[in-house]
Structures are given as C-alpha cells and as structure tokens.
Length: 385
Image (tube, rainbow, N blue to C red; front, side, top):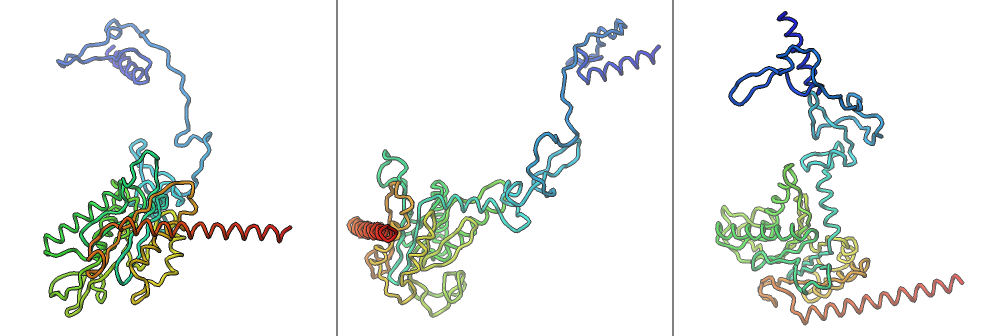
C-alpha cells in the first residue's frame, strides 16, 4: 500500500510538471509546514486537471521551414546555451557575426566596426587642412540641417591650445568629445612639462585614445576623423630626457642643438592611425578634395603663402560640395601662422572680410566652370546633330 501511494505521488508530480494538474502533490507555506494536496489526501485517483494546450513541436535545433541565409561554418563570437551546453552561432565574413563586437577580426583580417565608423565619417561634411611654410589653414563644409538653425552654431573646428586647432568630419557628439579629450591632454602636458604640447605628441596621444576604443566590446569606435593643425615654437631648448616632435627622430624625440618648431598637420582616423600631411581631406567629398590638394605646391620651400592657402581652402570646399548643391552649408575656416605672421602663432578664426572674399572668388570660379560645362554640352549636342 505505501508503494502504491508513492507511485501515485510520483505520477502526480510528473503530470504537474507537464502542466496537466492544477495543484502539486505537496505544498509548503512560509513557515515550512508541508501539506498534502486534498486530492491525494482523499485517495481519489481521478485528479482535477485541465486540458493541455496544443503546441507545435519544433525540430531539435533548427526549424527547417525557415530559410537559412548563413551557411558558413561556425566561428566563435557570441555563444548561447542549450541544455547546459555552449552552442556557437554560424557566421560569415561579410559582417554577420563578426560585426557584433569591435574586438573581433574576420578571417580575412577585417574589423567591421571600424569600417562602419569610417562610413559614418564619409556621411559628414568635407573637412580639409592645408600646411604651408607660413602656417596651417583648417576648413570644413558645415551642412545646415535646418533653416531655423542659428548661423555660426554647432562649430566643427575647436581650439585645443593657443597654437593648435582641430577640425573633424563625422558625428558631431563624437567630435566634441574628441576635442575635449585633446584639451585634457594638452592641459596634462602643460602641468607636467611646463610647456605647450607639440602637435605631433598631441596627434600621438589622440591616436592612442581612438585606438583603445577599437579593442573592447563594451565601447564602439569613434565616428569621426580629426585633422590636427598647429604651429610649434622653434626655440632651441635643452632636450635631455624630454620628448617632443622632432622630424629627425619622429614623434617622441628631439635632437639637441636643432630647432623643431614650425607648422604641422596630422590626420587621426577612427582606427587610431595617424599620419603627417601637407594637405589632408576627409568627409563626403574627400576624393575630390584630395585631387585638388595634390595640384598645390605645398612641399617645404613651396610657393604657397598663408593667404593663398585660405583662398584655396575655400575653393576646394566649394568644388568638393558640387555633388550636394541642393544642401545649404556654411564655410568655417581658421588659421594658424608662425610667430611673425598675422596670427602671431595663435589659432584663430579667419577674419570675416578675408573669408567672404575667399568665398566670393570660390563661387565665381564655380559658376564659370558650370558655364563652361554647359557650353561644352551644347557643342557636343550640335556635333551629334
């Protein structure tokens, strides 16, 4: 008889677990008192139950009625647990699976999250930097998102130190944080070395900062590319045990007895990579801008002056903006001259009169090019007739 009761209780537990019974065989209150189910206590074999809901039984692992898009062999990214065992999803190198974290490389060595960040940069306005013997010019095409926006607001160029400025293309919040971080690095350098930070060292530190955001799954890469321009002092200072931006040693060292000042221009990409340039361009119109920059005489000892660089920067921005003529934009420009130049080595905005003159010349040249294109098109049509 006791064995029959135990078998009955066991069957009731099984049926309860399968959602066939209203109540379990035993219940326990908050005081630890165990009570039998009234149906078990009465000894009735017909227990109160409710009909089981109809369910659709699926295959063990994969529902084959759903078309499978990904047929590549499994590779480790995210693992899920089934029956206490780890199961790895199937992924391909086209981005599926390998773009879920920026700390994962695809089999062909690509980091998709960084590539997506570069795409975000390409959607931003065109930014350029021009370096000549007399200084550096920074310019950006700031697209006007709304006619209600205040003119001059939401600037894309920021001053890091008195002698350094940064222009960026891409996501505006990321760019603001990038500039704030650069200001912190500049302040830290002044506190430690009692001197302004060299442009190359700032580029190195910001490159390391952006590179750190490509290594961890809890963060994402910056959606900006920053162009850093500055004019370092050319004082012949002791360099024993100090770091600097000497071209003879590269970023990180100076040579005693030499002057290491002058204009510098660097571009820092979302991957953290940075290079020194005479002319740099990024953003939506970067290819057109690069082609125009290559035509200029920007090498050391070149004929380009700072005033000419301002006019060329405005012209290049208007040329690169041709593909987006339906969108209004503001031209934002700053410059940094050497100590004997118009800005006395400080990063300031280009004077309004000079900027308006540069814009007028750029618009006039753009209109003349359009007229030439129309005349050439008419001539071609006549030749076809």
